[in-house]
Image 1: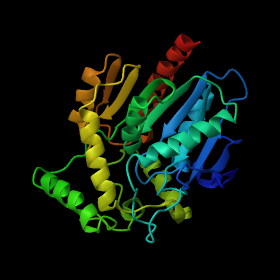
Image 2: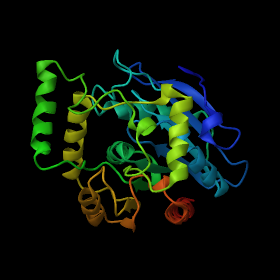
Image 3: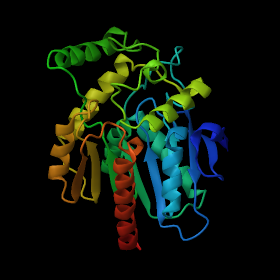
Length: 317
């Protein structure tokens, strides 16, 4: 199925002319995709893979900057979040049947793009969970010329005491039939709506913090709460599996803040170190949302990644 889907321009602050569509993955699950293209002289198309809890509109400002620099952009609402089909009776639980199911979403998007005549080559930006999904997609032949990973979820920060408990509980939850409940300490509340700016782990920029909050206040249907035990189990297994695989050989750029508190920095630096064409840029004082950080961080990151893509667009020509 491909039909027009809503796009909340009132909160996205994206360029005019964006188009959103419903797509149906191979297993029958519906997802949402949106894309924007420059009117001329396009250098290629960026595939934006968002993180857990995220949605298309969150990247509206980034899309504007990418278009200004000559790149079309595609953003995905994964199954189970944004306006993608929620998979449980409680729509606030972040849930997926199997982590491999996200690859079905990618396949549906790639098939759709072939009908939209968006410019090639394709490039990838994977943020947080999208970085984990994106890394797996590279191993499975995602047709991109280069990839950028923003605070990729190649490991999750946990206390040494909690980690074995999380592994054990998430593992036994599937055979014992309670994997669809919230992970310990999680709930259906979206913390961004009520949490104060002070001490937040996402960004040091007050404007971007309130930009994200306004989106969820105005369109609560975009919001998501904590993950299910099944999601946690899938994530832990996938990250461990990917860590044992060879790094992809295509050009990779990773962006990481020195004050990262959500994903595991060592997992990122370890993978980039073994990538034959990998480079890591660290931002002093930056937090989890590098593309939504204060201007001196964000502007540099946008310049670096678009220059990186432009160089490889020429190489692919």
